[in-house]
Image (cartoon, rainbow, N blue to C red; front, side, top):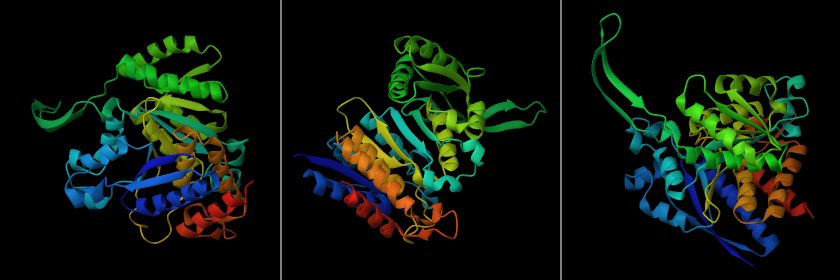
Length: 371
C-alpha cells in the first residue's frame, strides 16, 4: 500500500471549507483502499500575504514540488484588490503553475442529469446533455507576457494627450502550442474524436501560429475531426449547441473565459472541477473552478462538490486510483439524485438544501454504499 503526499493550499474565502471537505472524502478513499494520504497544509494567496507579505512563499512552492499532488481551494478577495499585480493573491496561481511546470489546465464541464433544470439553457438546446472538456494552455500567452504602464507623449486624434499607457503582450512559441495541442488530441482520442481549436486567427498573429502548428500535429491523429473556431463564435456556440461539443483546446486567456461560461450553462460554477498538469511524473494541481466567494465564507453555504470532483481527477490522473475516482463521481451523482443540494444548485423549492458539511457527509455516505 502507498502513502501519497498531498500539499493542501486552502487559500482564501471558502477555500478552507471546500478543501476540508475534499480531504474528508480522501480519508474515506484511504480506508477503502488501504492507502494513506499525508496532508501538508501550506499558505498561498491573501492568507499568505497577511502572514508573510508574499502571495507565494518559497516554502509553499518547495512543499508542492515534493508532493504527489497539490489540492488548492481558492485565492483572492476584495481585501487585497488595491495591491499591485505581482503582490496580489492571484500571483500565487501564476507562480504555482510556472514553478510546477503546469502547462495544461483541464476543465470538465458536465451537466449532471439531476441538475438539468438548473441550466439557464432551454431543454431543446441541452439535448442529450453537456459534457465538454476544455483544455486551456496555462503558462504562456498574455498572462505571462511582457507588461507595464508608462506615460505617453503621444496624442489622440482630437489632439488631447493619451496620458498613461498600459500594455500586456501576448506571446506563444511553437513548442508551447505543440505540447498543449497534443494533450487535446490525446483526450479527443479517448472521448469522441472531435477537437475544436479556439483562436482569433483573423486578427492575432499568435492565433495564426496556433493554426499552423495544429495542421502539423493533426497529421499524427488522423482519426480526430478538427474544427477551427474564432473565440467570439465559440462563446456563442457554447450557448447554441453545447451538446455537440466535446474537447476544446485554446490559449490561456480564451480558456479562462470560455470555461467560466461553460460552468454557468451546466448549472453552477460550483460544480466544475479542474486539473492542472505538466510532464508525467510531476505533481499536478487540482482545484475547483469557482473563486473564493468571500461573501459566503464561514456561512456553510459553499458548494464542496467541485473540489470533491477535483479530487476524483487527482486520483485518476496523478495517483493511479481510477476506480476510486469513478466511485467518487458516482457518489456525487447519487447524492444529487436523492434531491440533496447546496444553495447555489437548489433549482426549486423541492430541493433539500444542505450546508457544506452536510453535503460532504452525504457524499461520503454514498461513497461507502458503493460496492
